Image (cartoon, rainbow, N blue to C red; front, side):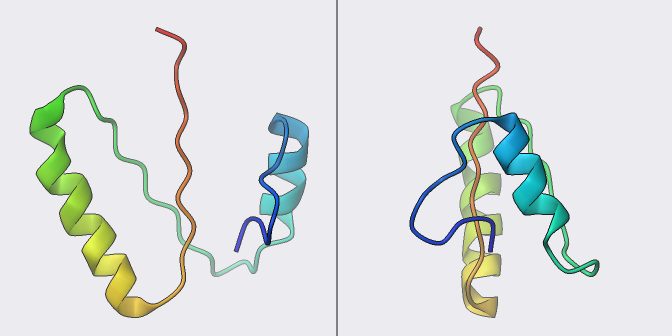
Amino acid sequence: MISSTQSPKNKTQLISLMNKLPTNSKFEVIEVFSMKDKPTLNRLFDQYMRKGHFSVMFIDGGN
C-alpha cells in the first residue's frame, strides 16, 4: 500500500513510500488517451479488486 490515510504530497514523498514497498510489488502502467480506454481500465480495476487491496494513482501530464 502506498498510503494509509494521506496521499504523498510530492514526488519525493511518493518515491520514498515506493522504496519502502516489498521488492515483489508489481506495477502496471496504462496510458489513457480517450474514453475508448475506459473498458480496459475497468477490466484491470475489476481484476485487481478480486485479488484484494491495491492502490490507484492518477498522474495528470499537465496537458
